[in-house]
Each structure stands twice: as structure tokens, then as C-alpha cells.
Length: 312
Image (tube, rainbow, N blue to C red; front, top):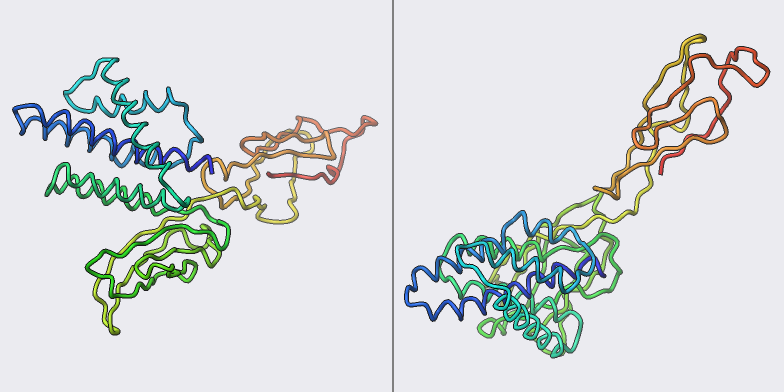
């Protein structure tokens, strides 16, 4: 779970930061200038490269690390905050978010809090296409699940708006997620009812449909991306590898294995056992052989003994 803490902290605390800054800047007489500052900071906060880095998962950040991160975001515009102002801003952000967490009655409500925070950002700079696109991208980043998640777990809470509460919710795009209606007819829990395997399907194009009397009233598309975990072992192209060497000259050959996992999860380390005749570079898989290969009795060897090559 720790690897998913930072994205939730970043989006929720960042939204609180935007609200506080907007309230402060409203006191400025030049409203056009203050709106420009709010927009610049928000675009920095929701920048695609920044969100991609945040959602990589970096464990649970320290308070000092969080503050430093948001200080950089707050200075994305011409506005500058001194140390005392930044301390007060960060304390307000933390206090407000802690209060919301304490009011939660179930873990899945953190999704609702995050979505509500993102929706509220649109009110700060209304009718702005750039902000709308940035918030929509952040919504897409929120729809992210790691592969091999626990079956039966709650992955989202869906609440139908007041004007559509006489409709029923249906989900298309995957059979691995099942909406389950709660005791409140307008609230659904999205349960994981099937296996998610990134190597098979890395993303799902979902559609949430609200239907009434067999007719679709509302249709909302949503991209769900599947995160990678280290659940595959690297494999050789062949179970047996034959290496031919010159009798009098040494040489080298590179052996490669494949791992379908991504990033560090797909890194391969090579090693060789049961022989001292050859060695292998653990990073590249390159096999090294001495210039003249001799056995323990000093005679030239006609064949290198069998050895075990390992990739992991």
C-alpha cells in the first residue's frame, strides 16, 4: 500500500493548496493577474510529467519532503512565498486534509475525496480549456490498478448525482470489475471480480452507463491503466545453449533472456554455476572465455563441461 500513498497525498494536498492560494489571491485588486497566477500554479501542479513521476510510487514521503515538493509547485508562477508563509500554507493544507480523513467511515472514501478535490479545481478557473484538460488527465491517472490485486477488494465508490437517481448503473469494457449496489440505491461499490494481468491487457477502455427503462441516459468513458508488479520470471529463448569456442583463441558471446515485466521489475541478473571455465557479466549476459582453455591436468580441452546458466 505504501507505494500508492504519495499519489493520494499529492492530489489531495495539492488541491487544498490551490484553494488556499486562490482565497489569498482574491484579495488582490488586479483579478486578471491573480487568475493568471492561479492558472500557472495549477498547470504546474497537474503537469503530465509531474503526475507520471508521482504515480510511479515512491513509498511514503516524509513531512519535510512533502513540503519541499509543494514549495516547488507553489513557485511555478511569478508569485513567491517566504519561509513563514510557506509554513503556514503547508500547515493549512495538512490540517484540512487530516480533517477529511478523520471523517471517513470506510477506506474506499479516499477515492471520493480525491475525485471531489479534482472536481473542485475546475471552479477555481472556470471555463478554461487548459485547466479542464489537465484535470481530466488527472482523473485518468487516478483510474489505475496494480495487476494481481486481491479479488473481492473495493476499488472505487460510485455515487449517482441527484438528477439521475432514478437510473441504474452498468459498466462495460471489462468483466473483471463488477458494480454492486449498496443499501443506498444511488451508491455503488466497484468490486474486483476477475484477475488483472498487465502482460495480457495493459489498459481497459471502460464506459459507465446510466440506464432508465432500457435506454442509456448518460455515458461516461474512463480509461483504466494496469500497473506492473514483479510477477514474472525471466526466460531463456532455449532450454539448452551450445557455445562453440576456438581451440586456441578466447572469445565472448552475449546471451540474453527476456522478462515481460516493466522497468526495474524487468531487470535481469545473470550468473553461471558448476564451472570455472567461463564467466558471465551479471548485467549484460556477456560470456567471457580465457584465451586458452585447459583442464586441471594441463591438457587442452576438446569440450567445455556442462554448466548452469541462471537469469533472475
